[in-house]
Length: 302
Image (tube, rainbow, N blue to C red):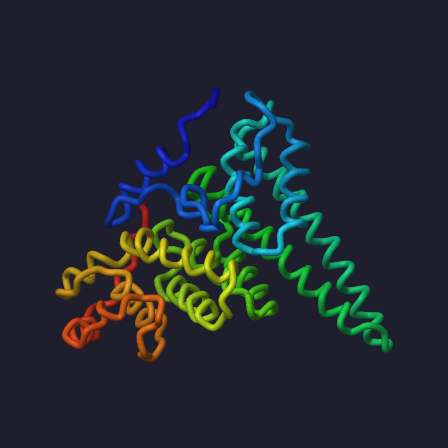
């Protein structure tokens, strides 16, 4: 039996006090990533409490085994839901144990990358050094991403948002071609959770969108597109629809995408193939050009 009220219920009550629309739970915790028809990545071993060591071991082994970034995100999200079932620890304490394990894993990857870089400087395998540097960046990103996810679960507080956002952006830039990393930044920095500015959120979302459109057809691309489409239907509606309606624009995935494009400061382009082009008719476009960018929510004064 769970010992506390489910986090999405608590978060929804809190969110209703300071966001313009009812938010259906914290984005990083209560909204699954679209990864296809897969069994639970973090399948719980029976009913009742679980061992802290099992949770850490299962998460790290899953992160090591999975190549698709969205799948690793989902493993972290499922881990967040299991923290309340760890025997003898509060959610906050259990989350910090997981974070320390992920930090140690990232430090080992950093040390391996540094050693390989030193050898490459002496004429050894540069390709291997580049691969290890990429792995180290992924693991450093996962530490910051997990911290943001667990913060949503713990208390909706974000004492390290700026630092984590900077870390995640640095890693995403270094890796360069992973759309899911930018989507993770967009979700972590959504103004709906007081984490970032609209411009930061919109810029990361549009980066994820554009990288996804450039990918060849694959299962991974399908998962990314489904996740982005889900976000345009749900999370972005909470953030943008009020201002779109005030401007006389019908809220649709296409109009929300265009609003995000404008908030990010990106020049207009032809409608992407993955958004219904019928929603980009000329009359609506002219109205949307004059639509105000969604205002940042007023700071919480709790």
